[in-house]
Length: 293
Image 1: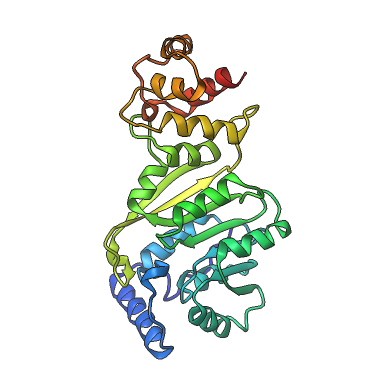
Image 2 (image 1 turned 45 degrees about the vertical axis):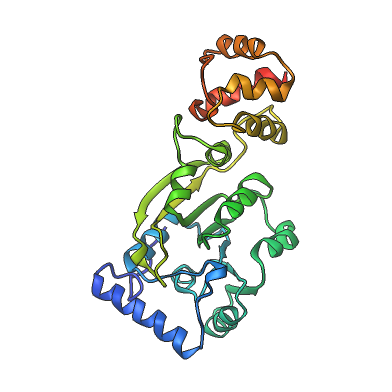
């Protein structure tokens, strides 16, 4: 896909980034906009990170984009340059009002004021599985919930390119030994890749933690033949006491003797001393197949 000329918003030099921050601060002052801590608002002010989001998104001209929590529209403006159909959903009334004025001359940009997940519940029927993308600087306080909704329920996007709190990003991409319910959920639906870490100084106001740019691609349920609800019900039991061995957690859930679960684990090549966080995605799939068939 052709990449548009990188104007002021895309220049990687730090002086340009300082200008973007000055511009963001000026807009907030002029429009009497105050970043809302309770909404997790931290506006992106780093040119290089902005360019990396657009590049990582690998946008398809034919696919609409959904942006959650656009704030004052720094990423919105960068995405709008591609001319694709873009819907940005902003909870903050004052920010949404500013966005509506700022993008009124761009008919391919649709500004929605309201709760993004509530709007999605009402609007999801107008979208098609795998036929839209998500790109967003997700508010930290709702990021995990947003991931769960868009990965585990239909219609699912083709891909998601999002900024997350660094710790959350690392949990989604965790490998055996440090996995969790979040990583198991994310990797059961998508190829998860951390593109880069992002310093907290890339945002204004500056949050207390760093962030990371993460892509979720090839989104679909990866455990064919296994019911999703049953899969995660059993997995939650497995992770219910992280310090306990998996055999004990599952025995209590399934009403089996620990020895019976131990025999099952050994039959599929999993140590009888394994803990839930040590299993690979494939081992979870095989285990679930045995438990549910």
